[in-house]
Figure 1 (cartoon, rainbow, N blue to C red):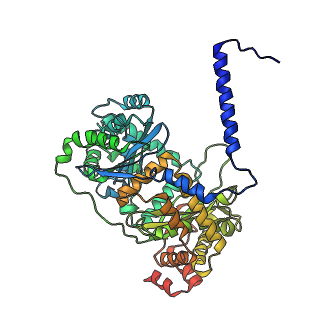
Figure 2 (cartoon, rainbow, N blue to C red):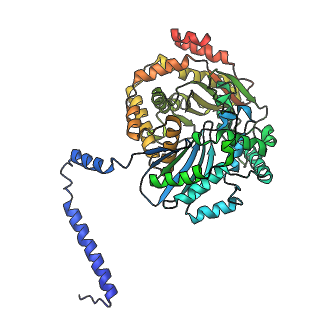
Length: 515
């Protein structure tokens, strides 16, 4: 049957389609047959040559001490941000919650932008958006935008960090925002943010890392322009800031940082100010309770059961120590989750807290392991939930799981599975541009360099059962910390945990718990 091409446009489309078809056919014909093995060695060698330079992170220190780190990537969008050596751990001389308030006030009015709407419109013109998050040991101001708009992004970031107006009206608005946020926590099924604050306070004696990340309700009205500006001038100094970027040209990023963070830095940087707090976190251990006689009200028709939330923890490794990788594997090995979680091995269904705790104790609502690593200390803990009447049994079960780390040998299969889970989580998370940005920024801020993902992967792979046994013994030799939220009437004291550990282990290393 004849085909009539009625115009030149149809002829062009036909030729284009025909050429693509021929190219695709040739490409398919060039592939090896499916019944022949691939030459894996040659494939790896060819791909490694083309990507070797793409993972390199370039770091430049500007004249005022500010660090600029970047990694080129692919795509049309970039992520750029400032990571500041600040956070709630530095609030010893300020009302607790100062950092929380600064997080809420981020990207409000500045010297060059009259309000948040103007900043939003500026970022929309750049094809992006901004965000701020505060942690115990770091504050992150970040922006994502089209990659060729580096100058505009740095202009917004520098204004938000150094030139915020902090108007009284804005502060009052954010006070109400924090009040609403704190009230909302009472209606959440889990109390992880509050419990995490409480276990840190118990572990570090309400100092440095033990200072609350969430603003206490009684401190909200203490947040004033004077307090906030003094904190900024003390901790938002250039030598404490790292500018990190992903999918940006390093030289262009350095150029724009010099323009906005060096040439146009605010006058208050030249004023004499109190040196930043240099206190080192000291793990001490202890018990803290947030006793609530009445059960929490839950929104909706179906009410959740009344629960007591308990965290039991011990000191772990700093992020500067090699043992951090062993604790990461131990965290995956214990795993855990909620009693109604579903999924396969990748979701932790074969972890110890699932198989030994949740599956064998029907009254246990949830049990999850967490590891927190900082520059000068660390905290490994297990968060668990059950009805308040089961408080004593819950503490006993979790204490026994800790004791099994040193009384029973590690199964090679569970260790290998935990290592693979940690490695896969690491590599999959680093596929995200935003995660890579924070990873680069945090490493350069804390270590002064960036450890490549391959090296991190190999460090996890090098963890052995002997390493897990050793760090478990060292961990359990420290004084335990315990925090609880809910009806604590039946909660045993810390001596009960120490006695259970001593009875189950009876090792010489355990004697140091009582010293």
